[in-house]
Amino acid sequence: MQASWFSRQGGERERNSDAAAVIQREHTLLAVLVDGAEKSPNGVELARHWANVSAQALLQTPNGASSEMMKRLREEQQRLRHTFLHDIASYCMMALDLKTREVQLWHCGDCLVGVQHGEEIRWLTAPHTLAMQPGLSPLSSNDEHLARQQRLTRCLNARRFSAPDHCMLTLSPGQTLLLATDGYWQEHMEAGTPILRLCDDASLLSLPTEGRLHGYISQHSDTDNLNEQIHK
Image (cartoon, rainbow, N blue to C red; front, side):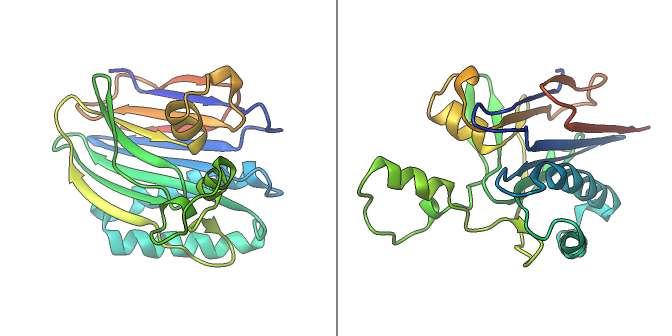
């Protein structure tokens, strides 16, 4: 299967603030997806920076050890204060062994990782948003529901390290991994808004889970926001 990258600027956005990085090495596939907040002064730059440095952190972490990964992410987060003090973003990351189909996932914010088999899609992570918090008072309007969906309870920022959730699992044969920003999974897939009418940036990275990728990733993006590396 051909891996693919789709990314499109939202109709209410000045620039596409999504970015991704993918590294192929022997039988290992590493990927990061980042959604920079447009209200941030350097949201686009933060998204591209974090996609690249966290992908390298994955590459340099032996066997994806969770404790070592957290240490590297914390170190990179502390460096953000020099350039991205007022910026925030959501992100998700994965490290996949293409031989065993064992995958490790990390996520912080409202980017999601899921699997697709045929037409069925199952999300493996849940967004860190106010709408997902237990014990909230009943909703009084659709506007309040939307506000809760958009309010992040955990995110990447320079002021405080928010540890991403981490999990490990083994995928079934024939599944495809999906990494999606909220503009894609929520506004397009869940709400059913057509791609050409989306308000938010929308990005989807689709990756096969068996064998090596056949060549480079097929790209359908309105900007150069995918960093792909192949290590022989």
